Length: 374
Image: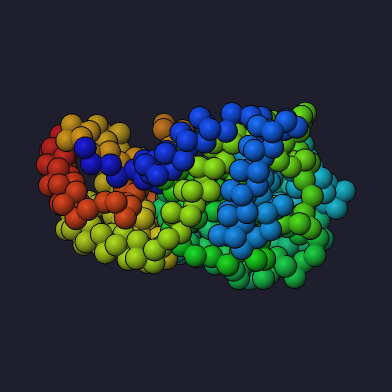
């Protein structure tokens, strides 16, 4: 099997799984309980939280545990807009966000909020001058991802944060699901940060929302004590310990891992450019972990099925997208409906080998010739 869908989810690291198993067996107490077993579990959560805070260079009381990035994004967007609606009802975002950004924004549109989409250049990068022009007194939230999940476009988050910082009434939320553990970004001026463990070799079902001290939220899950007042529910001790371990492992040797992936990306791209009907949608402003291509004239589902015959796994859009729709991100970048209808996402990891890429390329050649001959 050759797995090239790491941006959808990563295989769990054995060390992370071992941590989860050990904590599940040894820390049985509810961390909200006042007895010795509960206190033991709470102390472990506190240690895990302190480690995450240290790795991210934030305060431990700024970390909210969630079920993953979708919940974190919903809590950030709805939480800010409902808490600060007296300040205004204007939101700014981009055409390159995940569906878990558009979902809560669409909900708020029905509640009377206004949304503007900031313009981007030919590489999909936010036009900073247009962003400045869009911000007004009624703007309460700007939500822009650090790395697009389909194409891999890297946004200038540090510059965006400086712009938002100059507007004291406006908060910046960054979905960092595709960047945590892959690239370094200075987050000191970001108000809210979302990420999920299963994108960096952790377990599914645990994520974080980092909420800076100055920010308040309206919770979307009410009732019961937890690690913070912003998200009720019994804390998942083993999952919390596991995300701490996963994050620590992910950021270790991050530059060496990045170089490995970049070299594989260049090699893969150079070989795919040999085909007349293959268009590379990812550009030089993208993370090397994602290579988005379009095989014009071929349905992406057909290519996926053909590659599966060789036990090779890629994806069409993000795992959360409607599989029957064209890629909105590819269309926003290329303005080409044919490329948007035929896009494929190949996502790489430091675990990917050159031998796997060679096997993929050989299989791709057979699939290409088979599908184009129909």
